[in-house]
Amino acid sequence: MHKPNIFKYATKELSQDAFIFWLLDHVNPKYQDVDPRIKSCAMNLIAAFFELEDKKMPEQIMEFSLHKQYKNIDILLKINNFSIIIEDKTGTKAHGDQLTRYRNIIVSEVGEENVLAIFFKTHDQSNYKKEVEEGFKIFSRDKLVAVLETYKDVNSDIFNNFKDYITEIEDEVNAFIYKDEWNNKNWIGFFKYVQKELNRGDWGYVPNQNGGFMGYWWAFEKNETCWQYLQIQENELVLKINARKPENYSKFRNICYKHFLENAKKEGLSFQKPTRFGSGETMTILKTDYLVKDESKLINLDETLNKLKAYTQFIEKYALKIEDFAQ
Image (cartoon, one colour):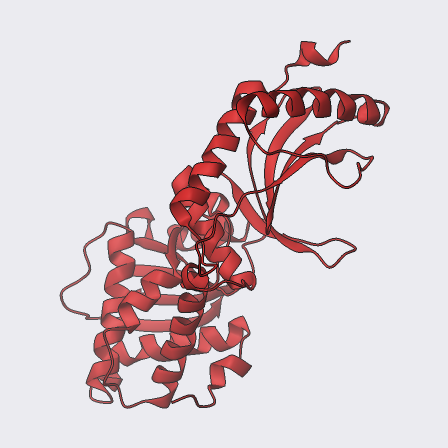
């Protein structure tokens, strides 16, 4: 039965901070008899943090403390000799050197071996290179759902509202498989699938004067003269170039268009000229449809992926080199 859910209205990171803090505080010895099921869930959540960091969780909790905004850290959980940094994010990313600073602060206090650094992310982002490089382990939404979903008999509206809210996001992201019309979350789910299968690429929302679109870009063939790459613009696949310098825009656009169109015909690929050419540093040279759907208008993942692999091999095979532009 559908009913109002407080977390659909309280969507800010501070609201999520409050839930995480509330959940973890059930491990506090002074609350040990409040709700054994929620305490068990909190313990499993902490155990998941230790597993991510490949550290052994203490069998007994002798010391416990929770801190909000300790030296700007979202949540700092201390268990015995361990300090767990929890940087909590919904739709935003880490900025500047905040993660490095937080980690260095706690390392200086308790030592490297006693620090766990968790990047707690309930919405999706294209990659976590920065967070990983700065020493954080990624606790993504699917990991959270795996912990929460085993607790189906908890008598708490707070707990159940949050669990339902997070599970609904996860379900919607993955719903692209059985929906014929996609929203942004469905596109994210599809792009995550493609990213995993191709083992490359990035995705995100691309704003423009026409309202923007969800995009995925990969297969960059870069040289000092002209970059060439592929980009999905929702229902359309395009081959784009970055001509680097204004004096080369028109010349390189024409060279690339002729070269790639001729070779696409040779390879039996259905690239076509765009409705109109742009003129700028980044330009679309060719376009095509790429989504393969079955009779019920649902996506055929295998065939769609095969087409994307074919176009990936095409640009890798026919990418122009520096000398090709010197004509």
